[in-house]
Image (tube, rainbow, N blue to C red; front, side):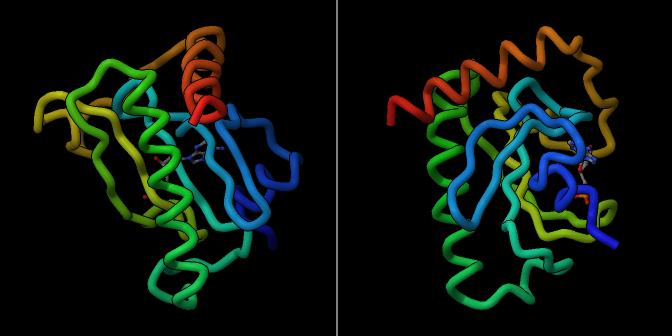
Length: 133
Ligand code: AMP
């Protein structure tokens, strides 16, 4: 069965899409740790990130770098943190998390509850910054 992220990529499940290219896709995490928390995924459905071949692995990180630059430009933060977990969704992905204080990078923190309108506004800001790159 297709992973939830494959369904998002296929357009079968809605998302707040930041950007995509031929092989990679970026969208807002639905339960963000901070405003602008983004997931970057390969379109190929592989569970464990270190099972990607070198080309896929490097390509994913190159795409994530572009997205991180757009997040940094558009969201108030000191840095964009990078994290790989994969405990919940069996489809490789990189978390990009804008943060200004160390405690914000803690996955045990309560997730933010943002309105659809706020998610949409954040998505638009990051997307615009990405398109300006
Ligand atoms: P993990 O697999 O542990 O790296 O966590 C998976 C992440 O995917 C979590 O932060 C979830 O909030 C996020 N997530 C799960 N389903 C969706 C969805 N439909 N849209 C956006 N993010 C999602």
